[in-house]
Each structure stands twice: as structure tokens, then as C-alpha cells.
Amino acid sequence: MMERIEINLLPAEYRIYKRNLKLPRSIVYPVVAVLILAFAAISVSFYTQNLASSIEDEIAAIERDIAANKNVQAEINKLRKEKKEVEEKILALERINVNRELWVRLMEVLSGGLPPHSWLMSIREEAGPPPVLSVEARTYSFHEVASYMSRLGESEFINKVELHDIERVQLNNRNIYRFSISCTVNPDAKLDISRGEERTDG
Image (cartoon, rainbow, N blue to C red; front, side, top):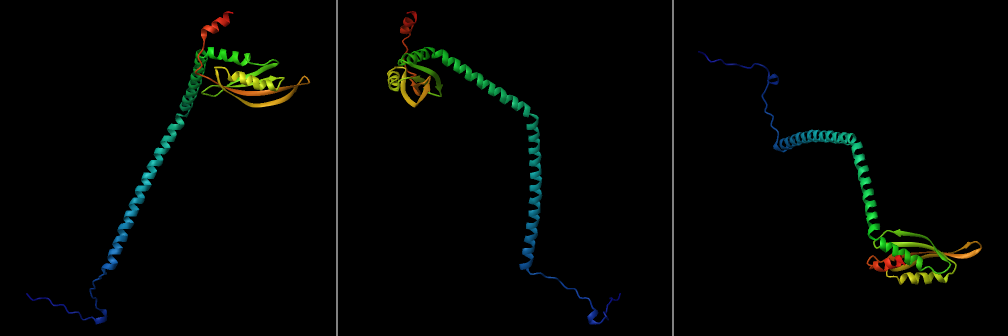
């Protein structure tokens, strides 16, 4: 068997040559790195979008639940407020019941220490502790204000007396003095119940 021999008779300019394309590593490696980074960025972007969408769906579901239970929450808050108000009233009543003797004595002190031609206008308890009484009164004599405060300060039921303001006003064409004082109550004052009963019976 004879071996086949091929002879290319085309001119040199028309001949096809096989050429191997060789790129330097300085170009190949950066291109591969850029492609890898691009793929990673695209993957992270898709993951982030999916995660954000999932979180938004969860938030929407929670908001729907909140809206659905809004009336229930409002009712719960209302009941809590009513409970707090009732508890405050109960505490106030218990306090009045426990300290009724003290407040009776305080009223005796406040009214009994009034100088002649003087009278009380109002007595208001301020926030404590200790309890503080805001007293407003009237008198025809300016000097009697100091005497009244001195008498109150000597009482075992009052720790401190302070003058807040005093003002001269006209009443039935006469000068009178309107004054307000604060009395800090002594919560540790010992009550002589037996003496109080004797005074009540007398």
C-alpha cells in the first residue's frame, strides 16, 4: 500500500497557518480574578435581595398581626389604667384609715393655733413623703402671721413651717392679709389616743 502524499500548491499568501494564541499571565490572572469577583458580587446581591424580601414579608406579617390585635391591646391598656386608678384609691383610703387620728390632730393644731380675727381658707395636701400641707388663711393683723407660724412650729405633729407669700387686700373697706404657708407633717409623731378620747368625751 502506497502512502498518500499531499502537496499544497497554493501561493504562500493564501495558505492557512495554525496559530496558537498565548496570553501572558499578567493579563490572564487579573481577568480571572475580576470574573470571580463579579460572580461573587452577583451572588451576594441576589442573596441580599432575597433576604431583604423575606424580612419585608415578615415585617408586613407582624404589622398585620398588630393591626388585627390593636383593639385588644387598647382594651388591655384601658384595663391596666383602671386597675392602677382603683389601686391608688384603695391606697388613699387605707392611708386615711391608718392616719385618721393624725389628721384629726393636725386639724386641731391648724385651727386651734389661729390668732383672733383670723380664719382658714383652704388646706391642701401636697405630694410627699413626708406629707406637706399647703395652708391658706386670712388675718386682720400682719404681726399675727408670724405668731401663727411660731405656734404651728411648736407642735409635735409639724416639723417645719414656711411662709410662701403674704398679700394685703381689701375686704369690706378693711385691710386684711392673705397668706399661704406650708407645713411639713411629722409622720413619726406619737398619738396620745387616751388624751384624745378624754377630750372627745369632755
